[in-house]
Image 1 (cartoon, helix red, strand yellow):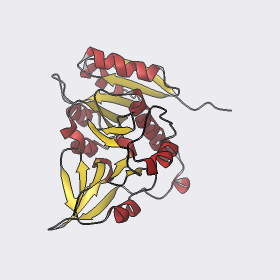
Image 2 (image 1 turned 120 degrees about the vertical axis):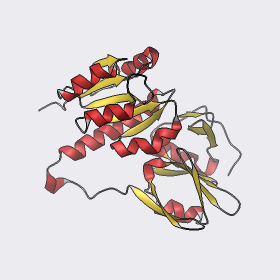
Image 3 (image 1 turned 135 degrees about the vertical axis):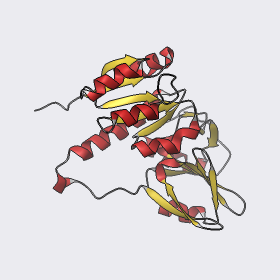
Image 4 (image 1 turned 90 degrees about the vertical axis):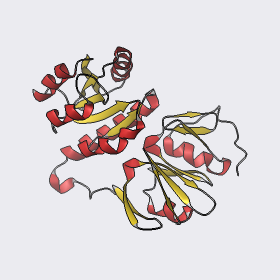
Length: 249
C-alpha cells in the first residue's frame, strides 16, 4: 500500500521565535515535513519557485517583503497559511486563496485546525475530475438596512445576538442585520458554524483556544452555554474538563 505523501512545509517569519514555534508545530504533526525554516523570504521564495514545497506558513508584516508581495511572486506554486499579529489583514489574505489565517500567538490546536483544512484542500485537488464534489458554500448574502451584502464565510468570526439586531463580526469590521439567529443558523454550513450560546454562533475554523467554559476568537472571550456545551464538544472532538459552568441555560 502506498503511503500518503507528506506535505512539505516552509516556515517564513522575520521573528526568529515565531519561526521556531511554527517549525516545532510542523515537526510534531504527522504527515508534515519541514523543508525550510527561515527569517529570509528570498530564501523561501527560491525554494518554492523550484517546486520544493507544498505549503508555506507565512508572516505578513516583514521588512524585506510583505507576505502579500511574497505570494505575488510565488503565484500558485504552493498553498499558503498566513500567520500574523494583525487581524485587519484577514480579508486581504483571501485574495491570495489562503487556506487559513492564523493570529499570533498561534496555539497548537489552532495550527492543527489549519492543517486539517490544508489536507482537505489537497485531497480535493488531487481527485479525478469525475470524483470531485460540488463546490462548497463559500459566501453568504446578508440583508442590512440599506443593501444586501455578500460576505465570504472565511471572513466571519462569530455572530452575536443583540436586542434588535444580529452583529456579524468580521476580521476588521462588523455588519448588522435584522435576521434572526435561528434563520442565520439554518443558512450557515452546519458543522463549520456552531451555536455555542443563545447569543452566539461561531466559525469553528476561527477558534484560537478554549479556556474555562469560553471560546476565544480574535482575543474575544465568548461563553459556552450549558444547553450547547455537549454538542459543541462533540463537533470539535475535544472535551474540556475544566470548562466549568457559565450559568446560561
